[in-house]
Image (cartoon, rainbow, N blue to C red; front, top):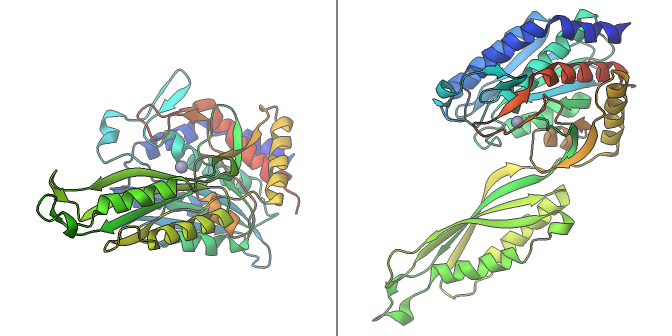
Length: 385
Ligand SMILES: [Zn+2]
């Protein structure tokens, strides 16, 4: 039976998977080291080419490259999408003190959980499918090199929206938690800068001439804060403020950084419009305000078909005697948002389980690398379409 064979394939390749995991974690691929990210993209490309995939690499000048690999030629049939990223949040040099290691059933190292383990998993999922000559659906693997920086230095967002058009489901092997929850939706978030220019003056001899940029900004920050609706799923967060030069000088410049969080595209649009409205309304005549959208992640909305895909995965887990996963609307963002925006039901957080991602304590449960690989590959075989 095919399902037994793919599960067995994962069991027979445990050591190979661990070796690849170690190899990928022991390569620097932080946001400041494009060379390292691209080197991993090249390794993944080679592995997929060996499996017969047709690969395209989209290079970016200031961000890690993107790899799109396809298998199964029939263009009339929709594909199964697999999503991952190989970049981490760790600065160059961090790896030296924190190389890959395994202790007490846990694997450590930068990106071991988020999400080099997931990438290893996806590669062995497609290898297992190839080993049984799987041809039910064409496959598309998309591996990204600048997920952690939210694609602010590339056009990867647009590429993803385009590439997922011909998929009908997608699996994202992102970081999973110890509670065995799978993400069927995710919050989105945007970063904004709100700048105010006023008029500088001596606060004693030229008080009337002054236009206080800090006070103008303060009015606006309070207005923004009042717009948060936590219970409805969206918040505005004023998180960094700067301005002013001296105790006796009316400040002519002030700046606030604002992070927004939301659950739907509709909320995202409303929030953007609200910020523009607040920025445009002047409290202190003679001041000027500019709002800049710095970038961000769109929310991953829950499609009705996503729940169906989750059900398939849940039943597959029971079939394999694995712990039963539960669905969650996750607080963190991921590239799954773009598959969903392209209309593709997607289940995320299918990678190994662990905790502490983005910190030096990041670790993944070694056994979960194999369990999740089996879960994904058997779920693919259980998809009806
Ligand atoms: Zn990640």
